[in-house]
Length: 173
Image (cartoon, rainbow, N blue to C red):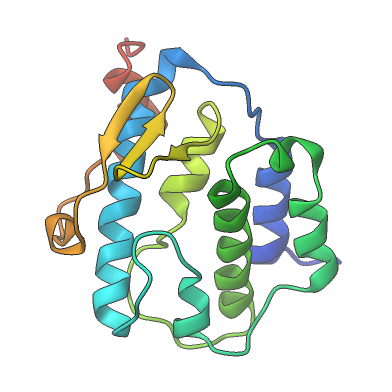
């Protein structure tokens, strides 16, 4: 394919992720999860959807538009993704489906990509786990999930740049 696509770009990013925990990035990874929870809440409210916080947003935003089966299988069939908590692999697939909607030109809400913070969190050192108590485990940290209204708002919960994320982790200059 000679032109780049949102799906193609995302596949490259997911395959490049080093899934080993990086405890030096725990603070930024927690902030990115908080930003994902905020964006997911905003999208859920805008779409009148159900399933917050971890669900297939594209199913509501662009019904019937899916990433190609072979692309999805290439991501979820990857041994390093299979080793992750199931919601991690599913979130990558959901991000692919939303990217497919963008590629198809489906009109989407004028909101920031809900999955970008999760992908960035993965890129900074791996996935997450969910507990039955409502806690999201990120490295050695536990973030209480809370409720959708807890996360609504327009103010980002994480820095938008790599330098800002590094500074949050104490690695900034």
